[in-house]
Image 1: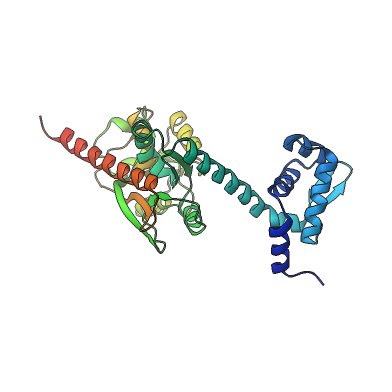
Image 2 (image 1 turned 90 degrees about the vertical axis):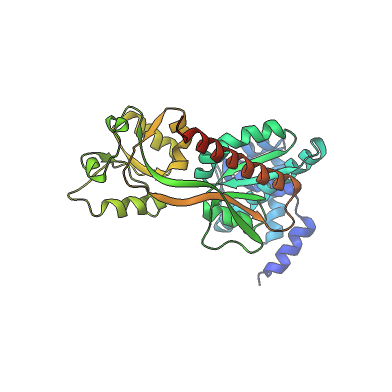
Length: 323
């Protein structure tokens, strides 16, 4: 009879070490006892013994042994995602302790969408760091589903995103940055110099569409559905921003995206957005933050981002006034 999960948990709590987890992950990654021993600074017999210990604790084989190395068993494949997450958490814990001890002003774990990173954080974070150099900001890019998982696991202090359909309990959303959809292209695209464009003006152009399910794709499909004829579609579909920007720069292509996603490239002159007659509104970007028990460092960053964007809005309004 196999031991129940509670027994396995108690065994691991009592006898497993972080080194067991490290060896498990490295063996699965490298597929070799020798290479694993070299990577973790142990002898090959030491690695073999640790693996045997872990298999005994879990009461199941974790690797198939063969002439060229080792291969994970199905049980090992089930365990690996959690083992990797443990090592990530261990590293993050060490970073937090080191930052608190060495810097004294805390750590902020910030997860942000691509739009929030490009629309706000690439401008604001350098200034925050200049003003508060002793606050360590751990910035990770992730879209809303992964960000919500991080919130549920307690792995994040702030989330930069659009307001989710369901705000996690104990958290609140604060909008910071207005956004719209825009049609982006190369700065050298012939249409980039024209004003008051309509969708009918774009019938002969080739489009680089967002992946199915993306908000930009939904907007694109809705806007183009009434148009006559078949659109010219580039047969490259990607969620990799760098690939999208490279395609736009090298070919005569258009793509519909949130303006925040391309803002930094438009401001640097690498890309342009078409000046359309019809506005294409989109939900604002902002911050999800805990309503209680937020760290002083997280509150400091949240307040800074709010003030930073408020100043940017005032500056933009002032610059837009007739002289």
